[in-house]
Amino acid sequence: MPIHDQGYRRYGGSRAGGRAWWVMFTTGVRTMLGNRRWIVLLVVSWIPFVVRAVQFYLAANFSQAQIVAPSAATFRDFFGQQDLFVFLMTITLGASAIAQDRRANALQIYLSKPLTRLEYIVGKLSVLIAFLLFVTWVPAMLLLVLQVLFAGNFTFLKANAYLFPAITLFASIEVLMVSMCMLALSSLSTNSRFVGILYTALIFFSKALAGVLFAVTRGSSFSWISFGNNLALLGDVIFRVPPQFETPWPVSLAIVLGLIGLSAVILERRVRGVEIVA
Amino acid sequence: MSATGVDAVVSSEHLSKWYGQVIGLNDVTVAVPSGITGLLGPNGAGKSTFMKLITGQLKPSKGGVTVLGEPIWGNPSAYFRIGFCPEQDRFYERMTGREWVTALVGLNGITDATTATAYSVAQQLVTTAWNILLAIVLVVWAFGWSGGKQLVGDSYAEAKQKAAEQQAARKEKKEAKRRAKTA
Image (cartoon, rainbow over all chains, first blue to last red; front, side):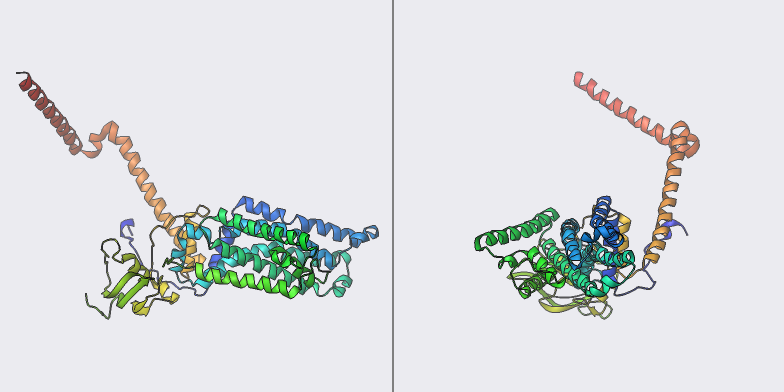
């Protein structure tokens, strides 16, 4: 058939429904994996895992290295070390997640497709959550498996069986909170740099304020003001290590859940194909 | 155009939209049949508001709108059957054209395998068209300047002669004018 005869033809093939969020997810992951700087960040974020793996190996094979034998606190500390990478990845990936779509006026394009607002948000959230779990939950679980392999027995695992759910629960809470907060901030602006700076400022300002109140009151009962401190306190409780702050953990949990809820409300109001200025 | 055509592609009944105190669209009852329809009007007439209402981007304040017989607001499954190209769309710097189009058709429920097949067919067509264009350019370049007469026949030579005659006539006219001025 000559080229000039091939005009517009309606698609007559089959369609798969209900996979819109999956399309958003796969597209986001593919795009990020094509970014060299992002790959470098992913690789660097696994350095603490390698260090811990060496520590576990030494503790399991050399009696002189028993001083570095793993405990529940080791896993709690590992999450503390990964906080820096969680922060960097959240800034790098999350800040542009919705802001860039708003800048390119792509929200209107997306939402004129068979895609609900919820599916759009879930799609964006899933990309961020997947990468954050890749640097928190995945290496922590692998460390647990490596400990068993290096030790050649299940003694540590039997004594600390709660570590499996603890790692899963804490990673889920941390990743969900930071992802939701960042997406909510990202939906407020069209400038991803501004979003990144705002997120950084909120984290550090709340931390600094909690520090000032600690200095004034000589106690850590105001630690709940800092977003990071709330997560840290929940981490201590979940991993059954002595809490770093005096704030009751239900208060921290309520703040974390409140932040997730507030972010959901912001996303519900901001993610619209057409911005209505009444 | 009938107000409530049964076979209308787009149909609205007393459709109104307010943005707070501002009226975007006021009591529009219309049925758009199949085929090409243009929407014309002065600034502020409500063209964009109407487009956003019939593509389900905005919720009507009053009245209703149906597209292909189905209510469009809050009905994403109806979007499978429509295409919308909004204004001011820009392009992502981080995505290639293929990735962007693949993602968009994916949202329409078309699988990656089907998209890849369609892409290869499109690529083949573009490559063929490009090769034909390249061949034409090469032939014209090879014969057009060194031996155009042999390639395109007398018409080329005739056109060349006509252009030369016209140029000579213009020159002569100019010269006559100059002489008249001097006299």
